[in-house]
Length: 129
Picture (cartoon, rainbow, N blue to C red):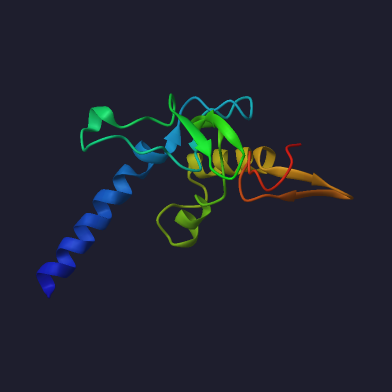
């Protein structure tokens, strides 16, 4: 049992060290001055080759509920906040802070009398704007 626990902790550490490699763009265009932030989802690649894996900087994603096709780097949501909630990242981590600024502007839905935060931008359930 100790071997399994040790393996699981090592694996969790390995995953933690790669979260940004898999889910952060360096070329986001939603907020000027905030090009580095977490993306909502990164399209999967074909096969197991690391070279075949799309990057958040250059790939496109189709929003299945009618939201259309968009550059992955410009589709954001609040899931990255779970990294803070679960203690994986500090709330003052620069990518967390930049992502928070992006989500505040990128996923707002205008409603009377103000705005609310949607699930993610380009969500087909809500009109853009």
